[in-house]
Length: 75
Image: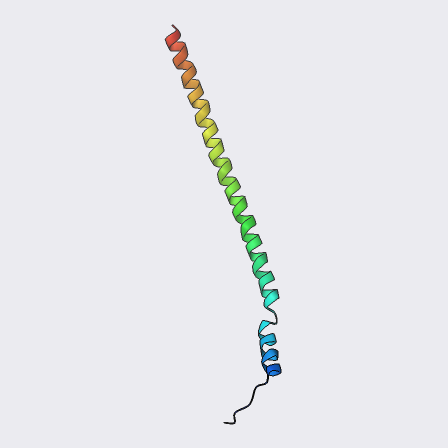
């Protein structure tokens, strides 16, 4: 095998070739993360709405029970 001397310019070209397309790959990853963030935001909104609805029902039930207790003790 013959040893080939590598110049600074050769090294610069090799490094440049290594970085070609990296920006496109990062853009693709960013798009996937954006999609995942949108999906998770949607899921969290649904969960939040379910919890709020559940809490609202529980509060209304408690209000009814307190009203009934007040009426019972008012007698």
